[in-house]
Amino acid sequence: LQTLHIYTNQLSGTIPTHLGQCTNLQTFSVDGNGLTGTLPTELGLLTILESLYVPMNKLTGTLPTELGQLTAIKLLSFLTNFLTGTLPTEMGRLTNILEFYADDNVIKGTLPSEISALSNVQLLSVTDNSITGTLPTQVGLMTALKHLFVDSNLMTGPLPRELGQLSALQILEAYNNNFNGTLPMELANLTDLKSLSLGANALTGTLPTEWGEMTSLQELLVHTNQLNGTIPSEISAMS
Image 1 (spheres, helix red, strand yellow):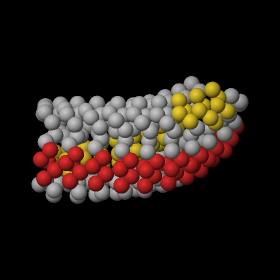
Image 2 (image 1 turned 135 degrees about the vertical axis):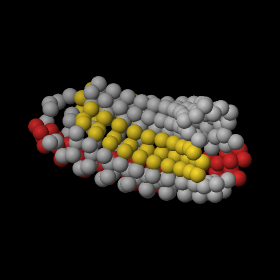
Image 3 (image 1 turned 45 degrees about the vertical axis):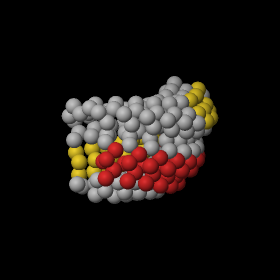
Image 4 (image 1 turned 30 degrees about the horizontal axis):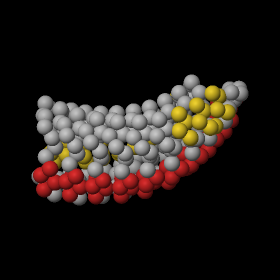
C-alpha cells in the first residue's frame, strides 16, 4: 500500500498503531473526520512517507519525537486539532519537508532553533497556538521560505533582522503577538514580499524609509502598535 486517502468522512476512533507496518506508504490523508486519541509513535516507522495529512480531527496529546524519523516527508499537516506540548526539536531532521502546518492547536513552548535546518521548507505555519519566546534568529537560514505564519500566539521580543535574509519570502504574518522593539529596516531586502502583517503587537519606533524598496508589496498591516513619527514619502515606491 502506497497511498491511503480516507479524508472527509465520519470516521471515529484512533489512528491504529499497526499503520506503522505499512512501510511502503507514501501518502496518508485522514483529514475532516472525527478521529481522537494521540498520534501513534509508530508513524516514525514510515520512513518513505512523503505526505502526512491529519487536519480537522479531534486528535490530542503531543507531537511524537519519532516524527523526526520521517526524513522523506514533504508535507506535514496537523492543523485544527487539540494537540498540546511543544514543537519537538527533532523537526530539524526533516530536511526534505516543503510545507509544515500546525495551526489551530494548543501547542506551547518556543519555536526550536533546530528549524533552521529545514533548508527546503517553503511554508511554515503555526498560527493560533500558545507559542511563547522569540522568533529565533536562525530563521534567517531558511532561505527557501516563501510563506511564514506565526500570528495569534504569545511570542515576544524584537523581530530578528535575519528575516531580511529570506529573499524568497512572499508572505510574513506575525500579527496578534507581543513582539516589541523597532521595525527592522532589513526587511527592505525582501523584494518579493507581497504581504507583511505585523499588527496588534507592541512595536515601537518609526516606519523605516528603506521599506520603500519593497516594490512587490501589496499589503502592509502595522496597525495597533506604538509606532510614531511620520509616514515616509518613500512608501510611494510600493507601486
